[in-house]
Amino acid sequence: MDFFLEVLTGGLLAGVMYSLVAIGFVLIYKASGVFNFAQGAMVLFAALTFVSLWEHGIPFWGAFVMTLLSMLALAWGVERVVLRPLVNRPPITLFMATLGLSYVIEGLAQLLWGSQVHGLELGISDEPLEVGGMLVSQFDLFAAGVAGVLVLILSLLFNKTRIGITLRAVADDQLAALAVGIRLERIWMIVWAVAGFVGLVAGLLWGARLGVQFSLSLVVLKALPVLIIGGFTSVGGAIVGGLIIGASEKLAEIYLGPLIGGGIENWFPYVLALLFLLVRPSGIFGERAIERV
Amino acid sequence: MSAPYILQLNQIEVIYDQVILAVKNVSLAVRQGSIVALLGANGAGKSTTLKAIAGLVRAEIGEVVQGRIYYQGLDITHAAAADLVNQGLVQVLEGRHCFPHLTVEENLYSGAFARKPRAVELNQALERIYHYFPRLLKLRKNQAGYTSGGEQQMVAIGRALMANPKLVLLDEPSMGLAPLMVEEIFQIVHQLNQEEKVSFLLSEQNATVALQYAHYGYIIENGRVAAEGETKVLSVRDDLQSLYLGL
Image (cartoon, rainbow over all chains, first blue to last red):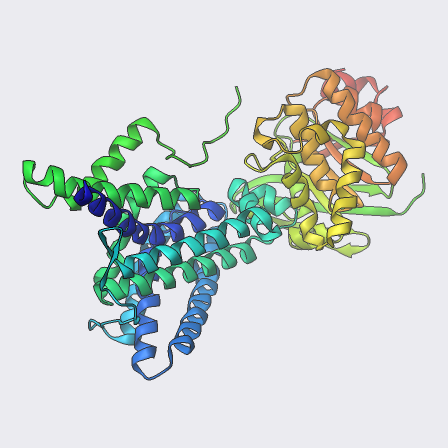
């Protein structure tokens, strides 16, 4: 039983790491209806920029702020070059654009900072901590705390502020948003900047875990089942989806793995997501399209 | 009526996607404080004309290629929608276009943000909308997507009013609504016009109700103005009645 709890806790905490990436998707999807395939590349770009600046002797917070500014510049550029010319085009057009964008951003990162692997030591001990007889990773606890704070800030932003109402309005109906005088360009720029910030946080934590390297942009793929389960439009859903994926893949690996051969951790989340698609295609917390008959 | 013109269209021509000519040579004018109706069949170019005025055709890959549009004497032919809203020119889109996942109250709020009101002003503006649309007060916490068609039309008009407009462009307000609801909506338009001197330019296929409430009317056919005149005159012209108005 203790072992079960330990696996479960470890899985839940690992899941939070997936959630961090998924939240970036949710933000952009909510405000523009675009599935931003380039989110992974943004995570990579942020992590690589940060670690390169840090290695050049710039102190932690200095590097953090400079990276944040570069994410803002990136958001500005994306809005100008990609989003603005594609206003009111079908979602698939925008999706394809972000697909291309992901390669551009990865290339840009490589051009600026080179392609070698960097280690990233955030100074958080990875010594397991003993909590009630269980061993829990301190790093995972820290990541979970960060994710919690992030979700709190974002849900306040979305539900309590004028910006939040405006963001949700744009997500619902772009033409109507234009008609009431909302400046779409400004909103997209804000949302991509916030997604860039979330990408930076995710990039630091994932970078510290895996090392800052180009495979970092592949964490996107693990965010997909998280989004399908949690729903594409809910920040809370991204968290719950991450927890479900994290816990179930670890439990499946331990208890199901020996029966059908190991390594199922890698594909189990996708099977789970497929099952969810059959039962609840909009995810647990996703907004269902309102249709009146 | 000899009030100055709040809006003037000078022989405008609108093309979509660089090939589709939707409006050719439309000239019209709206006097301050009046209600003007654009009448005509489906596809005649009424919606495009309104969207051209509000700066919304560009969002649909359209463009005003000929002619000029003046609002309060200023050339707004290529102005951005957000700037026009700030100057008091707001459009209520055909088919209402509420934000379905936002509550009724959030929908209304969204209409005011463009002018960056303080919290007090925002709440006063909201009170005003509930004064004109008491029905919305009961629905304020409901998601707009789940309210009835007539209620959504009220939300859409209320949302436009939150911007404190001087001129409202109303596109097909009666579309898909029950006759009683149509009457109620037009009553409120009339009341806003009388009490607050808001000018309206509205497009309608329902000529009966539009002619009843508007002061002046234009009949649009194939992207041109086919006839115009005071509504009193238009509604008794036999030739128009059978040809365009279906009265």
